[in-house]
Length: 356
Image (cartoon, rainbow, N blue to C red; front, side, top):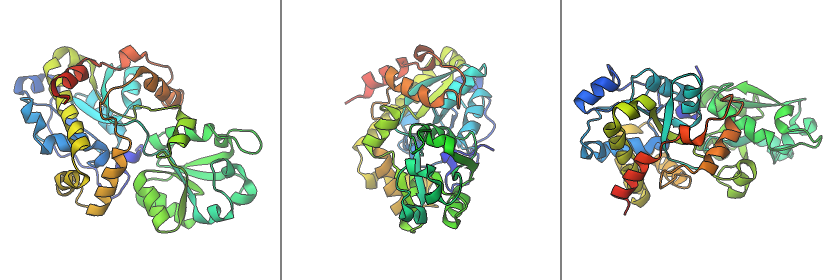
């Protein structure tokens, strides 16, 4: 199983809340859409808000429930297999699907920075002087020849972004930091945080909740924070469409009305999140989807993601190119032309209809 930040807490046990979907043909006949994301948390808040605010029904389609299989790879598999018409997940997944022969198209992006590209180091190493990414190459400070850095799994989203981040920094020997560390799979929240706390890992790639837990419990310190705009731009060069809504090209061709309904609902949800007070968003989604978290954690997550959400949902070509730098060759082998990867026509119609 390939872990990503999509199932970053054991409490968000992956479940499939709806079953028996039969793909494009059945959805057309019933004016029903099937929608997937990996776990029901704030990063996919557009889906949650759209359902609770009945934006799908406003678009004359039914959406009985979410397919929640756990892990972005499973979401894109659901889309390419016809179990779900639409997926919301990592932007490299539709690119991978297209590369493998299932032409998959991005429809919009919900954020501009990767929330799981944070690097958190052990607090005892921080105290010894490992206060930067570059310092991970100092064997004397780290206490071993190569610093051990954990992603959720080798090949996962945390690994893809982690390798890219570490490649952008150079140690005292002039070599990229990534060449001087050992990557390991750390699993989900319990094993990732437990491994850092126990000294099994020297650093981990961290979603915000892991970063908060490590710092508040006193066993970790952040040395690369995506919320630091200067640090982000130094590494990535600007915004990236990290989380995207996507569908098969055949769905666009066979069911453009359903695609438009989905994009309309997503755009309306994003605008509602933008205008709503943080407490209103929490009130709407906490109990139905995130009751295993405290209300305070949900509120903190909402405030965090509001700093990186892309309010107009658009994908600029230069931002797409920034993403390709991360994905090639770690996630995909060759670049896909922007015009083939992204169809902006549905988003433009949604913006024209609902932009206030």
